[in-house]
Length: 131
Image (cartoon, rainbow, N blue to C red; front, side, top):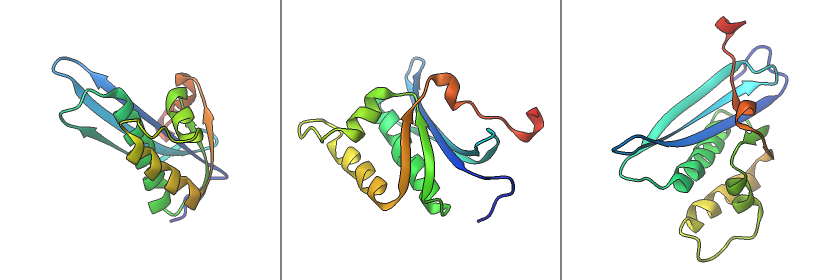
């Protein structure tokens, strides 16, 4: 797939738990370095209020989406330093999410991704109608 005006690709993801009863969901989107959106998706996890699980799912599905669209080299910005550290550090065998973290690490070994921490404001996206 080829997109116009994309000199570099940036992946942003986020996961949230809201309300009572708790609803958990995550979203991911690809944008160019000017902040313009060109691909994205959102989903939810039923029956869970585990925010760490939701945030790790967002990472996994974001990487999968980018890889499925043919992007194997991109920058990845995320506002969860806890998740970034879980991915970059050696795997803690007794972490409840160890299998999901291993799956993320395997994906990262297949593609060339730079993962960086950003503040929440750094994950904003612009659409062409906002220009």
